[in-house]
Amino acid sequence: AQKVTQAQTEISVVEKEDVTLDCVYETRDTTYYLFWYKQPPSGELVFLIRRNSFDEQNEISGRYSWNFQKSTSSFNFTITASQVVDSAVYFCALSEGGAGNMLTFGGGTRLMVKP
Amino acid sequence: DVKVTQSSRYLVKRTGEKVFLECVQDMDHENMFWYRQDPGLGLRLIYFSYDVKMKEKGDIPEGYSVSREKKERFSLILESASTNQTSMYLCASSLGGFGETQYFGPGTRLLVL
Image (tube, rainbow over all chains, first blue to last red; front, top):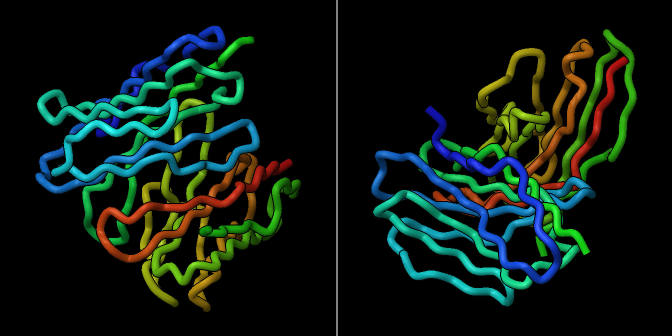
């Protein structure tokens, strides 16, 4: 079973629409970290946010917000008033500790924002 | 700012060639990682290193080896490139603690003909 599931493989919106990218994870650990990364067409993964399992507070950073719900094992990402520059592939990832601080990535969601 | 650089953005090699992909980070990070990214398969970990001269296999190490002689540099080696190794290769680094953020380089698109 996948440990990190991003069920939406592709989303298309028109500029200024709000959009939510879903991430559902699976772990037996009580201590873990969750991440979101953005991969624009240039290819580099850009770090967006890190959240540990003990901090369920939602976070807002400009037009970006994240909703972490342990009860549903979800860590969803919302972009408000989307812009063309938000077009990218977005990855959710889980770190459960262990050697090397490895990440397990979801399959990614391609977001296309049309003008 | 964390800076992770990779030696090439694009690389074209022939089947059977030995290929070196270099990654350098400037933040004194303990951990370094090599991933490959393929359509429909997401990011898969090839190898990682948690210290100089130390390495651990990831999910798909077959056909690859790595070298870490200095803390800032982590090399991925394809001993005899094959067409199924055509992919995007991403390097990352992080501090050594649990849950530390991995920072990625720009990636190398490798085409093996």
